[in-house]
Structure formats: structure tokens, C-alpha cells
Length: 81
Image (cartoon, rainbow, N blue to C red; front, side, top):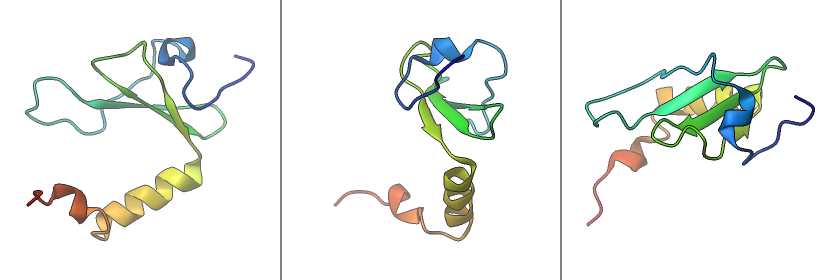
């Protein structure tokens, strides 16, 4: 692949190697992740495997995971009033 970019069709990244690092009882609607050769990470919606892939640097993914572990994303679980 010559150019990997944010929003590209996920199918262009290939069908092999996509994993569901987390999954719940949501009827199969999950986020899938693919580690790219250069260390970046692609994310896609499992129910739309041909849809857009979001591409993140290793540092961005690392910061996100560390933030989640420390509770910085807990606001996402709060119910709207």
C-alpha cells in the first residue's frame, strides 16, 4: 500500500489481522483494530468493514489507553440528564 490515510476505506488495508480488542453484549457491533507495519493503528466499525478506517499514531493510541485506565474517559459512560 502506497498511502495510508485517515478515513480511507478499511478494506484497502486488507482483511487479515483485524482484531476485536474489546467486545460486549451489544449484538456484534464492535470496534476492530489493526496494527499497521509502521506502528500506527487503524480502527473500524465491525458492522461496516468496508467503511472508513481511522488511523492513529502509536503515541495517540498509547495516550488514549493510559487516559482510559486513569479514568479520564469515564464521562463517556455518564447518562445524559
